[in-house]
Image 1: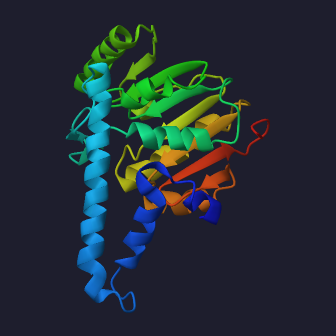
Image 2 (image 1 turned 180 degrees about the vertical axis):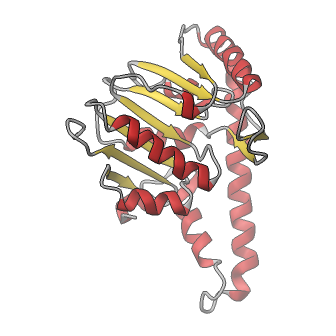
Image 3 (image 1 turned 90 degrees about the horizontal axis):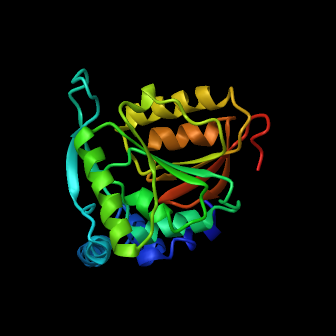
Length: 250
């Protein structure tokens, strides 16, 4: 973590949330009696974020907000269930604005796009195109309906590309891409997904960026030691990387 990136987390008092979360850890000297007050403050912050997240749907007539439990495999080979929750619009804006590279030559790719919230929000930025990759047919259908509602509400005509199916069966486009991970997989599968993506991208010569929100510790440690990625921003709740292979220097 870099100190400047801690205080770059301005949305919904993110920097304060980090500090409070660390203060309430067991064994923090002299703060045992303050833990209930810290918990209450963090709960108020989380309620504020949840209420703000719901406003996106209220503003655009979309249905993206809410938490769902979804399977991690289409064929049932993996019985594990993982929680889906749309990104808050203020958090995504904060992360994309923190990328120290012009975005107009990149395609935005949302890995685990759910109901399409991040793809819709990313349309505020000058990406060349938008792609959503989602395993669940039901969530993909919701995402397409949300695009229609968003376009009707805004008078715009965004037209994302969609891949419905297993991320591991998807072929990334041969062009400059920014990959967005909003913690879309369980920890073990996340690490496998990162290694899979590296293997594919290492054969290409296109610039690659990655924005990862709330990476599991195993993936965070892997990214920290990987020779494939160069960290550009390292905030406690999000990270920005550039691929470090061949022509992929930025």
